[in-house]
Image (cartoon, rainbow, N blue to C red; front, top):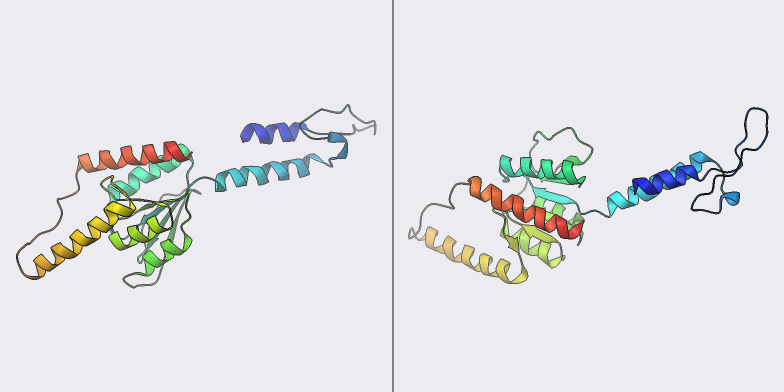
Amino acid sequence: MLNFAFLLSQSVVSRQNTSGAALPHRQGIFNTTKLPTTLVLWSIAKFYCKNAAMSKPTIWIDADACPKVVKEIVYKISGRLQVPVVLVANSGMHIPTSPLVRLVQVKQGADVADSYIVEHVEAKDIVITADLPLAALVVEKQAVALNVRGEIYTEDNVRERLSMRDFMKDLRDQGVVTGGPAAYGPKDAEKFTNAMNKILAKKL
């Protein structure tokens, strides 16, 4: 796309020197006899470059419960591949100074951040979340839902996980099962990184 912008900038016609004589036409990819000035050409180039950026997937992060190491991995991937990232959270948090990364702080409430993500996510996007109901809604919108341990949710496995979650909740309520998932570790981070790279390799 940068090459396209360069070619556009070279499609300059009927330029005049200080004496008023017309300079030779420089042939570009357009019919140069009908184009106005270099400024307009660069505006067209910027328009196409902006559209190219918009065609990339957005990485949405359900940020309140997302481990810091996962966010850091996403920031690095974003910078390397120039992919936009949006963190959605109920509380404020530090994000890197980058035009590619932004934070949306929503009102307090159990499902407010989830609702915001579902409302704005598109089919080309990726949502990082450990929240199963949110993952199910993301899958319904045909976007990619990925948990922090590198597992991609599908229509089948997200239903299975929801059923298991409800079953385990009942067991915990009865005191049969205690505790929660294992602590997040380096192997989980590695699996997440590999999954992200594979997903983006297909989308970009």
